[in-house]
Image (tube, rainbow, N blue to C red):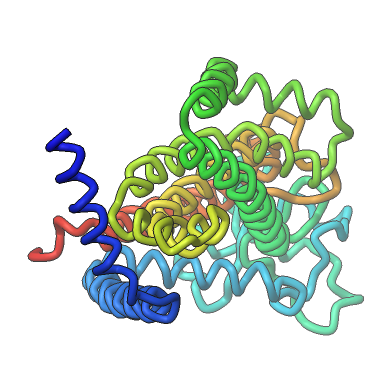
Length: 357
């Protein structure tokens, strides 16, 4: 009886102390909390940018990627030829650049049937040309300009990879946020479903999807996106689980903010660093799979040129015309390496342990 009286007295005292607290006071405290969080966020962004700018490899990679993106965007204005234009009398010509003719790779010469080194451009009929013809990276077996086809191949490869990663993020982020925020039996059920998807080999699933769908750029994008979102979902779910018990999230719940508001205002901005690294690492994956699918003949349909189909064309005649494979292979290697180095730079920038480095 005595303990009950003491508890009642304590509760009454608490009520007397909080009776004067109004909704305006709660609103004021909420605004102070939001302003403090925003100031911390701004300061953190500056530190991240500073660490990223210190990474030379990441900055060089970023410049290379920007150059490739600009080339892809302005492809029609960077070349005088069409990627599908065929010239039967200009087939399999070697690369020729007048200013670099001192080097064997760009002198326009090749072995004839007698084993002699000759200028392949001297025997061309150029009477209809306003200026001497010279293909910087040579031509393919149908007389199409290799430089033009590589530029358009980069365009298609970047388009496919960026589109696939956009769909990947929409599905993966939504799935991961719901699973991590709701928790409980729903989280367990969603994770078991995710494990089932992980158990199916991605390459097998992609090929089956492309065999079931009509071979188009859209089908390639969907096939890659629908087999790569699981990693994003798992990363987002793990980050959400660790953040939902943080004090600022509990404070947001205390102030009555909705789950949707908390997810998009507090949790999603705090996982953007991890998500950016995941995206940068996923783009090379998408480029590689698109190239592989085109290489085996189930990817981008003809007459479109992708880096994978160009490598396949060059592979078939590599011993006779090595330039047809070297240049597309070099382009895709540089792109993939640049995205991987950029992802490493972003990961180091968002890593707070590298603050003192």
